[in-house]
Length: 350
Image 1: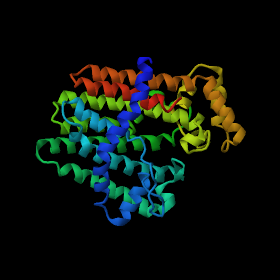
Image 2: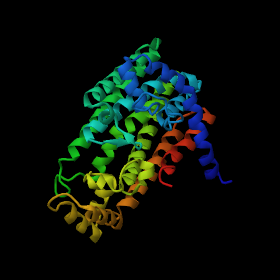
Image 3: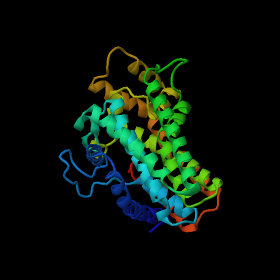
Image 4: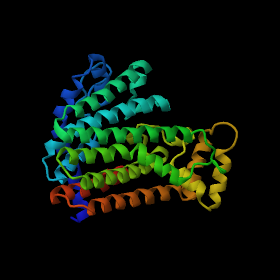
Protein backbone atom coordinates (compact mmCIF):
# COMPACT_ATOMS: atom_id res chain seq x y z
CA UNK A 1 0.00 0.00 0.00
CA UNK A 2 1.45 3.38 -1.02
CA UNK A 3 1.51 6.36 1.36
CA UNK A 4 -1.20 8.04 -0.72
CA UNK A 5 -3.41 4.95 -0.59
CA UNK A 6 -2.86 4.56 3.13
CA UNK A 7 -3.90 8.17 3.72
CA UNK A 8 -7.02 7.70 1.60
CA UNK A 9 -7.96 4.73 3.77
CA UNK A 10 -7.21 6.51 7.05
CA UNK A 11 -9.07 9.76 6.32
CA UNK A 12 -12.63 8.42 6.83
CA UNK A 13 -11.55 6.99 10.18
CA UNK A 14 -10.25 10.40 11.24
CA UNK A 15 -13.55 12.02 10.25
CA UNK A 16 -15.52 9.34 12.12
CA UNK A 17 -13.45 9.76 15.28
CA UNK A 18 -13.87 13.53 15.34
CA UNK A 19 -17.57 13.43 14.48
CA UNK A 20 -18.29 10.92 17.24
CA UNK A 21 -16.47 13.15 19.73
CA UNK A 22 -18.47 16.24 18.73
CA UNK A 23 -21.92 14.74 18.07
CA UNK A 24 -23.18 14.54 21.70
CA UNK A 25 -22.33 18.20 22.36
CA UNK A 26 -23.86 19.27 19.05
CA UNK A 27 -27.10 17.39 19.81
CA UNK A 28 -27.25 18.93 23.28
CA UNK A 29 -26.68 22.38 21.82
CA UNK A 30 -29.49 22.05 19.26
CA UNK A 31 -31.83 20.98 22.07
CA UNK A 32 -31.41 24.43 23.61
CA UNK A 33 -33.26 25.97 20.67
CA UNK A 34 -36.99 26.68 20.52
CA UNK A 35 -38.62 23.32 19.58
CA UNK A 36 -39.63 24.65 16.15
CA UNK A 37 -36.11 25.82 15.41
CA UNK A 38 -34.64 22.61 16.81
CA UNK A 39 -36.80 20.55 14.45
CA UNK A 40 -35.76 22.68 11.48
CA UNK A 41 -32.10 22.52 12.48
CA UNK A 42 -32.24 18.73 12.86
CA UNK A 43 -33.69 18.51 9.35
CA UNK A 44 -30.97 20.76 7.95
CA UNK A 45 -28.25 18.75 9.70
CA UNK A 46 -29.63 15.57 8.14
CA UNK A 47 -30.69 14.03 11.44
CA UNK A 48 -34.41 13.85 10.66
CA UNK A 49 -37.00 14.12 7.92
CA UNK A 50 -39.68 16.78 7.52
CA UNK A 51 -41.92 14.67 9.75
CA UNK A 52 -39.32 14.78 12.53
CA UNK A 53 -38.54 11.07 12.33
CA UNK A 54 -34.84 10.23 12.71
CA UNK A 55 -32.78 9.50 9.60
CA UNK A 56 -30.23 6.82 10.64
CA UNK A 57 -26.67 7.37 9.55
CA UNK A 58 -27.26 10.74 7.88
CA UNK A 59 -24.65 12.97 9.48
CA UNK A 60 -22.46 14.35 6.70
CA UNK A 61 -18.70 14.20 6.82
CA UNK A 62 -18.26 16.75 9.60
CA UNK A 63 -15.30 18.46 7.94
CA UNK A 64 -15.39 21.59 10.09
CA UNK A 65 -15.88 19.52 13.22
CA UNK A 66 -12.79 17.49 12.38
CA UNK A 67 -10.70 20.60 11.73
CA UNK A 68 -11.63 22.02 15.14
CA UNK A 69 -10.77 18.79 16.94
CA UNK A 70 -7.50 18.37 15.03
CA UNK A 71 -6.66 22.04 15.56
CA UNK A 72 -6.84 21.49 19.31
CA UNK A 73 -4.72 18.35 19.09
CA UNK A 74 -2.22 20.05 16.79
CA UNK A 75 -1.77 22.76 19.43
CA UNK A 76 -0.87 20.10 21.98
CA UNK A 77 -4.26 19.86 23.66
CA UNK A 78 -6.93 17.21 23.78
CA UNK A 79 -9.47 16.82 21.01
CA UNK A 80 -12.11 17.56 23.63
CA UNK A 81 -10.68 21.06 23.95
CA UNK A 82 -11.89 21.75 20.43
CA UNK A 83 -15.42 20.35 20.79
CA UNK A 84 -17.09 23.64 21.74
CA UNK A 85 -15.42 25.33 18.78
CA UNK A 86 -16.55 22.50 16.53
CA UNK A 87 -20.14 22.94 17.71
CA UNK A 88 -20.08 26.72 17.17
CA UNK A 89 -18.68 26.45 13.64
CA UNK A 90 -21.09 23.67 12.68
CA UNK A 91 -24.02 25.80 13.84
CA UNK A 92 -22.73 28.74 11.77
CA UNK A 93 -22.17 26.51 8.76
CA UNK A 94 -25.73 25.21 8.98
CA UNK A 95 -27.09 28.74 9.34
CA UNK A 96 -25.13 29.83 6.25
CA UNK A 97 -26.44 26.94 4.14
CA UNK A 98 -30.06 27.66 5.10
CA UNK A 99 -29.76 31.33 4.15
CA UNK A 100 -27.63 30.60 1.08
CA UNK A 101 -30.31 28.29 -0.32
CA UNK A 102 -32.92 31.02 0.15
CA UNK A 103 -30.77 33.60 -1.65
CA UNK A 104 -29.97 31.24 -4.52
CA UNK A 105 -33.49 29.83 -4.76
CA UNK A 106 -32.11 26.27 -4.53
CA UNK A 107 -34.86 23.75 -3.89
CA UNK A 108 -32.71 20.69 -3.15
CA UNK A 109 -29.57 19.96 -1.17
CA UNK A 110 -28.08 16.50 -0.69
CA UNK A 111 -30.99 14.99 -2.63
CA UNK A 112 -33.56 16.42 -0.19
CA UNK A 113 -35.69 19.58 -0.14
CA UNK A 114 -33.88 22.60 1.23
CA UNK A 115 -35.14 23.99 4.54
CA UNK A 116 -37.04 26.89 2.96
CA UNK A 117 -38.69 24.52 0.51
CA UNK A 118 -39.68 22.06 3.23
CA UNK A 119 -40.76 24.53 5.94
CA UNK A 120 -41.26 27.87 4.17
CA UNK A 121 -39.03 30.92 3.78
CA UNK A 122 -40.01 32.59 7.05
CA UNK A 123 -39.34 29.56 9.26
CA UNK A 124 -36.06 28.95 7.42
CA UNK A 125 -34.85 32.51 8.01
CA UNK A 126 -35.76 32.27 11.70
CA UNK A 127 -34.04 28.90 12.06
CA UNK A 128 -30.88 30.33 10.54
CA UNK A 129 -31.01 33.33 12.86
CA UNK A 130 -31.49 31.05 15.86
CA UNK A 131 -28.47 28.93 14.89
CA UNK A 132 -26.36 32.07 14.45
CA UNK A 133 -27.30 33.34 17.90
CA UNK A 134 -26.72 29.95 19.50
CA UNK A 135 -23.24 29.65 17.99
CA UNK A 136 -22.13 32.97 19.44
CA UNK A 137 -23.73 32.18 22.81
CA UNK A 138 -21.90 28.84 22.89
CA UNK A 139 -18.50 30.50 22.74
CA UNK A 140 -19.37 33.33 25.13
CA UNK A 141 -19.94 30.66 27.78
CA UNK A 142 -16.32 29.49 27.59
CA UNK A 143 -14.62 30.91 30.70
CA UNK A 144 -11.41 32.89 30.73
CA UNK A 145 -9.31 34.50 28.00
CA UNK A 146 -9.64 31.57 25.59
CA UNK A 147 -13.38 32.21 25.37
CA UNK A 148 -12.80 35.86 24.52
CA UNK A 149 -10.24 34.96 21.86
CA UNK A 150 -12.59 32.32 20.43
CA UNK A 151 -15.44 34.82 20.07
CA UNK A 152 -13.06 37.22 18.35
CA UNK A 153 -12.03 34.54 15.83
CA UNK A 154 -15.63 33.57 15.15
CA UNK A 155 -16.79 37.15 14.69
CA UNK A 156 -13.97 37.78 12.24
CA UNK A 157 -14.91 34.68 10.25
CA UNK A 158 -18.56 35.75 10.22
CA UNK A 159 -17.60 39.12 8.80
CA UNK A 160 -15.59 37.42 6.07
CA UNK A 161 -18.39 34.94 5.37
CA UNK A 162 -21.01 37.60 4.69
CA UNK A 163 -18.45 39.66 2.76
CA UNK A 164 -17.85 36.68 0.48
CA UNK A 165 -21.56 36.04 0.12
CA UNK A 166 -22.06 39.66 -0.92
CA UNK A 167 -19.29 39.35 -3.50
CA UNK A 168 -20.85 36.18 -4.88
CA UNK A 169 -24.27 37.82 -5.25
CA UNK A 170 -22.80 40.94 -6.86
CA UNK A 171 -20.96 38.78 -9.40
CA UNK A 172 -24.35 37.75 -10.80
CA UNK A 173 -25.07 41.29 -12.03
CA UNK A 174 -21.68 41.77 -13.69
CA UNK A 175 -21.13 41.01 -17.37
CA UNK A 176 -19.28 37.97 -18.70
CA UNK A 177 -16.82 40.08 -20.67
CA UNK A 178 -15.37 43.58 -20.82
CA UNK A 179 -13.83 45.83 -18.19
CA UNK A 180 -16.48 44.92 -15.59
CA UNK A 181 -16.15 41.15 -16.04
CA UNK A 182 -15.35 39.00 -13.00
CA UNK A 183 -11.73 37.86 -13.17
CA UNK A 184 -10.39 34.58 -11.71
CA UNK A 185 -8.41 36.37 -9.00
CA UNK A 186 -11.59 38.14 -7.81
CA UNK A 187 -13.38 34.83 -7.65
CA UNK A 188 -10.51 33.36 -5.66
CA UNK A 189 -10.81 36.18 -3.12
CA UNK A 190 -14.55 35.60 -2.88
CA UNK A 191 -14.02 31.88 -2.22
CA UNK A 192 -11.42 32.64 0.45
CA UNK A 193 -14.04 34.67 2.29
CA UNK A 194 -17.21 32.69 1.60
CA UNK A 195 -15.89 29.12 1.87
CA UNK A 196 -12.45 29.41 3.43
CA UNK A 197 -13.37 31.60 6.39
CA UNK A 198 -15.26 28.90 8.30
CA UNK A 199 -12.77 26.15 7.51
CA UNK A 200 -9.95 28.37 8.74
CA UNK A 201 -11.99 29.45 11.74
CA UNK A 202 -12.70 25.84 12.70
CA UNK A 203 -9.03 24.88 12.81
CA UNK A 204 -8.05 28.10 14.56
CA UNK A 205 -10.83 27.82 17.17
CA UNK A 206 -9.64 24.36 18.17
CA UNK A 207 -6.13 25.70 18.67
CA UNK A 208 -7.30 28.80 20.55
CA UNK A 209 -9.45 26.75 22.93
CA UNK A 210 -6.45 24.49 23.57
CA UNK A 211 -4.41 27.53 24.58
CA UNK A 212 -2.23 27.78 21.47
CA UNK A 213 -0.10 30.88 20.80
CA UNK A 214 -1.35 33.26 18.12
CA UNK A 215 1.11 32.15 15.37
CA UNK A 216 -0.16 28.57 15.58
CA UNK A 217 -3.82 29.58 15.42
CA UNK A 218 -3.11 31.98 12.55
CA UNK A 219 -1.26 29.31 10.55
CA UNK A 220 -4.14 26.88 10.99
CA UNK A 221 -6.58 29.62 9.94
CA UNK A 222 -4.60 30.30 6.75
CA UNK A 223 -4.39 26.59 5.96
CA UNK A 224 -8.15 26.26 6.32
CA UNK A 225 -8.74 29.24 4.03
CA UNK A 226 -6.59 27.69 1.31
CA UNK A 227 -8.53 24.47 1.76
CA UNK A 228 -11.73 26.47 1.33
CA UNK A 229 -10.65 27.78 -2.07
CA UNK A 230 -9.79 24.22 -3.12
CA UNK A 231 -13.21 23.12 -1.88
CA UNK A 232 -14.90 25.85 -3.92
CA UNK A 233 -12.98 24.95 -7.07
CA UNK A 234 -14.12 21.34 -6.73
CA UNK A 235 -17.69 22.45 -5.99
CA UNK A 236 -17.59 24.40 -9.23
CA UNK A 237 -16.44 21.33 -11.14
CA UNK A 238 -19.25 19.28 -9.65
CA UNK A 239 -21.74 22.04 -10.45
CA UNK A 240 -21.04 21.47 -14.15
CA UNK A 241 -19.87 17.89 -14.53
CA UNK A 242 -20.85 16.21 -11.25
CA UNK A 243 -22.93 13.04 -11.02
CA UNK A 244 -26.47 14.07 -9.96
CA UNK A 245 -26.66 10.95 -7.77
CA UNK A 246 -23.74 12.29 -5.74
CA UNK A 247 -24.32 16.04 -5.90
CA UNK A 248 -28.10 15.97 -5.57
CA UNK A 249 -28.31 18.56 -8.35
CA UNK A 250 -29.10 18.22 -12.07
CA UNK A 251 -26.12 17.85 -14.41
CA UNK A 252 -24.80 21.22 -15.66
CA UNK A 253 -26.87 22.93 -12.95
CA UNK A 254 -24.50 25.91 -12.52
CA UNK A 255 -24.40 26.52 -16.27
CA UNK A 256 -28.19 26.43 -16.49
CA UNK A 257 -28.27 29.23 -13.92
CA UNK A 258 -25.46 31.08 -15.76
CA UNK A 259 -23.55 31.11 -12.48
CA UNK A 260 -20.09 32.64 -12.63
CA UNK A 261 -17.88 29.81 -11.41
CA UNK A 262 -14.13 29.29 -11.57
CA UNK A 263 -14.05 26.90 -14.57
CA UNK A 264 -16.18 29.26 -16.68
CA UNK A 265 -14.23 32.38 -15.70
CA UNK A 266 -10.91 30.63 -16.33
CA UNK A 267 -12.15 29.42 -19.71
CA UNK A 268 -13.27 32.91 -20.74
CA UNK A 269 -9.90 34.35 -19.64
CA UNK A 270 -7.96 31.91 -21.84
CA UNK A 271 -6.66 32.57 -25.34
CA UNK A 272 -8.19 29.38 -26.72
CA UNK A 273 -10.56 29.86 -29.64
CA UNK A 274 -13.23 27.93 -27.73
CA UNK A 275 -13.30 30.83 -25.25
CA UNK A 276 -14.70 33.15 -27.91
CA UNK A 277 -17.39 30.64 -28.87
CA UNK A 278 -18.25 30.30 -25.18
CA UNK A 279 -18.44 34.08 -24.81
CA UNK A 280 -20.87 34.32 -27.73
CA UNK A 281 -23.02 31.56 -26.28
CA UNK A 282 -23.19 33.04 -22.78
CA UNK A 283 -23.90 36.58 -23.96
CA UNK A 284 -26.57 35.58 -26.46
CA UNK A 285 -30.24 36.52 -26.05
CA UNK A 286 -32.38 34.45 -23.71
CA UNK A 287 -31.57 31.50 -21.44
CA UNK A 288 -29.62 28.46 -22.63
CA UNK A 289 -31.68 25.45 -23.66
CA UNK A 290 -30.55 21.87 -23.08
CA UNK A 291 -28.39 21.77 -26.18
CA UNK A 292 -26.91 25.17 -25.33
CA UNK A 293 -25.98 24.09 -21.83
CA UNK A 294 -24.31 20.93 -23.10
CA UNK A 295 -22.37 22.92 -25.70
CA UNK A 296 -21.32 25.45 -23.06
CA UNK A 297 -19.93 22.65 -20.88
CA UNK A 298 -17.95 21.31 -23.84
CA UNK A 299 -16.54 24.75 -24.60
CA UNK A 300 -15.53 25.36 -20.98
CA UNK A 301 -13.62 22.08 -21.10
CA UNK A 302 -12.04 22.82 -24.49
CA UNK A 303 -10.91 26.26 -23.33
CA UNK A 304 -9.18 24.74 -20.31
CA UNK A 305 -11.69 25.66 -17.60
CA UNK A 306 -11.93 22.19 -16.11
CA UNK A 307 -8.15 21.79 -16.09
CA UNK A 308 -7.70 25.24 -14.53
CA UNK A 309 -10.10 24.40 -11.68
CA UNK A 310 -8.26 21.15 -10.92
CA UNK A 311 -4.93 23.00 -10.98
CA UNK A 312 -6.34 25.67 -8.67
CA UNK A 313 -7.48 23.04 -6.17
CA UNK A 314 -4.06 21.36 -6.21
CA UNK A 315 -2.24 24.70 -5.79
CA UNK A 316 -4.43 25.63 -2.83
CA UNK A 317 -3.79 22.26 -1.16
CA UNK A 318 -0.04 22.80 -1.50
CA UNK A 319 -0.43 26.25 0.05
CA UNK A 320 -2.37 24.73 2.96
CA UNK A 321 0.39 22.21 3.58
CA UNK A 322 2.99 25.01 3.49
CA UNK A 323 1.08 26.82 6.23
CA UNK A 324 1.23 23.71 8.43
CA UNK A 325 4.94 23.28 7.76
CA UNK A 326 5.63 26.82 8.98
CA UNK A 327 4.74 26.25 12.66
CA UNK A 328 5.45 23.69 15.34
CA UNK A 329 2.53 21.28 15.74
CA UNK A 330 1.98 18.03 17.60
CA UNK A 331 3.24 15.40 15.19
CA UNK A 332 0.29 12.98 15.29
CA UNK A 333 -2.24 15.75 14.71
CA UNK A 334 -0.11 17.23 11.93
CA UNK A 335 -0.15 13.81 10.28
CA UNK A 336 -3.93 13.60 10.59
CA UNK A 337 -4.33 17.06 9.06
CA UNK A 338 -2.00 16.20 6.19
CA UNK A 339 -4.00 13.01 5.65
CA UNK A 340 -7.34 14.76 5.76
CA UNK A 341 -6.65 17.84 3.63
CA UNK A 342 -6.09 16.14 0.24
CA UNK A 343 -8.80 13.55 0.92
CA UNK A 344 -11.44 16.24 1.38
CA UNK A 345 -10.80 17.36 -2.21
CA UNK A 346 -9.74 14.12 -3.93
CA UNK A 347 -12.67 12.12 -2.53
CA UNK A 348 -15.11 14.46 -4.27
CA UNK A 349 -13.44 14.30 -7.70
CA UNK A 350 -12.83 10.54 -8.04
